[in-house]
Image 1 (tube, rainbow, N blue to C red):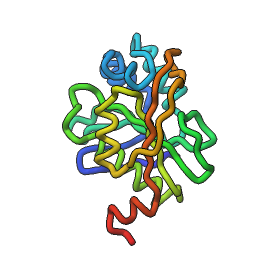
Image 2 (cartoon, rainbow, N blue to C red):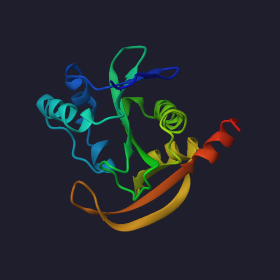
Image 3 (cartoon, one colour):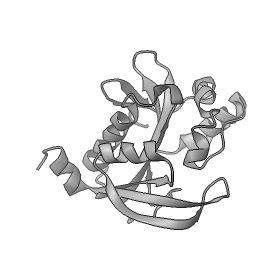
Length: 185
């Protein structure tokens, strides 16, 4: 069974089929998917299919506002044996995330990412965590910086899931860097 994780303002829990309407409400916004490399959702049914397939992956979480109980974004941990965008070692992971536009700029995404970093380093025994963002996605870069990830490298000519060619920047944090940042020597 997947774990439920908690931050001060969010519950990170597995996606449920009953979340399809909320998922569609935010994932249909063209400001979200394309900048992350995926197409906007086209219907509640499309969102339900995403919940049943992509969001059924282990360590994939709905970001649920404690205040309202509504899922307003998604975040997940991908290991080297799954679908990911960076070449990782077996003991490394990648974190991916997105947040509904009405909730941008409130610090919710860094809150969720910090929670997943803790899960990676404390519970899953990961040695390093990667995050990638496409050229121009400054909000995503800022989330990574706020969470202590540092620039590692840039790859050009990568084909996104949308089929276009993009430049992707990769940031990384090691367990040792994370421990030092969180004063957990």
